[in-house]
Amino acid sequence: MKTPALAFREVCKGFRRGKATVWALDGVSLEIPAGSIIALLGPDGAGKSTLMRLAAGLLLPDRGDIQFPQAAPGGEAGTGVSYMPQRFGLYEELTVQE
View 1: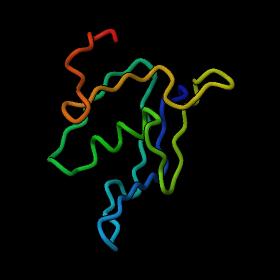
View 2: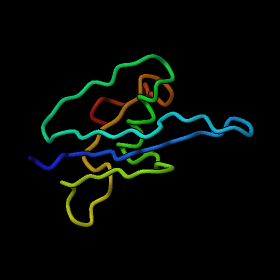
View 3: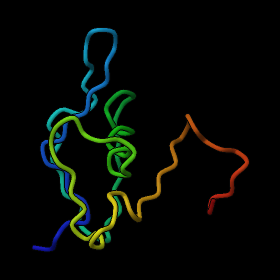
């Protein structure tokens, strides 16, 4: 079996809302093979953006592990990942390359 380009193992990520924690991801496990193209589909609030932010290294999981097995030694998590959200932080003055 090929080594996955990205692997989530029992990943949990929560956000505080007042005194309560709202879990955006609760025990997510998945492997993404190198060279694949994937799509995340789901309703608002399903955790898609949270999963992408974790994959890009913009957030850290509260529990679980995210592995980038093919990252260069000494490289950082999220290397080679590009992420542009649909809204919130969309910089209209930048080009696609920027």
